[in-house]
Image (tube, protein in one colour):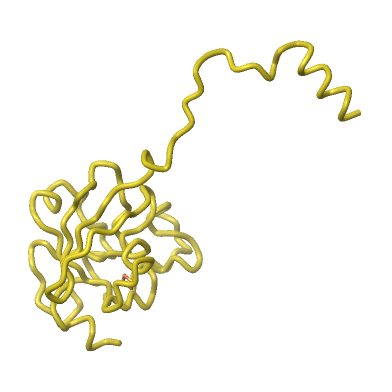
Length: 156
Ligand code: FES
């Protein structure tokens, strides 16, 4: 049966591309994030669509605990922020600072992110955000992110 289908497809030309094939390359799906961490600088590659926390962890940015992983155990708050069974961020240990002009271009923090940031005992700046609650997009290429000194490493 399978052979018949394959033969039919080849005979009727359905396997032939009708125009140029535009498969997305890896480069189309990647951006770079500039990370200032404890006096050191690192430029890390990241995938569009993943959380900033995931990208930082992949490249062993170690002093960002991110204990609750943004509550992604059940359902990603980034994918579906109105999902009622989503935990959302709870720990606040992925606090980062995002430089201008990127921080102004980010969407406003959703209510849970704002609540968690304001509940923490660290100094909250205008650039304060939670790495788990930032979904990477193409325009964020070369975004500058810094880890607040010492506050996160004390939590480890
Ligand atoms: S990892 Fe817990 S709030 Fe971001």
